[in-house]
Image (cartoon, rainbow, N blue to C red; front, side, top):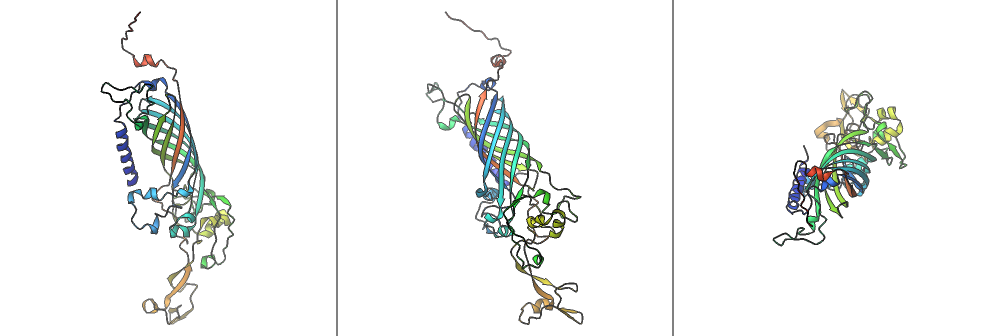
Length: 401
């Protein structure tokens, strides 16, 4: 199922396109048969929706005043937008229906340090990744672009054949299926506070170097007793499927050339576009598999220190004294919790990024977005298009002298 916000956006797009389609088009309905082949080249921007980063509209700072169905758009971090380039071959199958082979290259990324959500900033994870995508796409036009006419002709009722500028723009929607390659990298900007007991003998030095994250198995993918679905030494694949959906506008300069403005959303089959999905895993196990840098990049126990309330048991290392079988670890008579919890209560310094704490949201796969401006050129199909148009008809040509 599509998120509610995307469904509403698609409905609005369809309504807008239906308005454009009401304009009469003074074009040859068989024009596409003359020039079936088209190539496009474009540049633009890329962004992503993953577990990392995000805008100030997310998390605990969302006061509910934002429109809920636009939440995914609010959560896009514009500060991390990066480049994208695309090239495509298009075959004009019908007047309003095109088949397109699309090749795209882009870079995406996200950084918790840029988020205004306090929990995300405390997690302090980041990533960047190149995206190489190959996709097959179908385009459907609600309105074809017009290039106008030389003499600004009018119909028999005196109406201009191109009433206003909007009639010169084409409007289309597109969807398809594709595959892409990605390889997330993370920057080592981690500082592990020694105050939490997990970090008593663990320290790291931030050096801002980028490390490939997939091979480090930062969530314990494929390791013993890991909580992910990846077992027996396996981890996520760098090649995944995507479903492109989007819409675009086309402006024709003439019958051969023009430009397109397109916004495309890519649903993917992975939640590891940013190398984050589930919970923090045991750091010592990660280090035993991938070395110290793997433990550092996992972020386990890297959050801000905070006191947690705990209860002692006979095997607890913080045990201070036992009298008659009763544990006595809290000897502070002014502690108001003694009357409620007894002398077993004590405070311990931990973090919100310790083993077992939430690292990402495994219920939603990641996605990425392209916004491109492309120039196109059409080429002659070199077919007997006139014969094809009038196939089966008796056409008489009357000569005059």
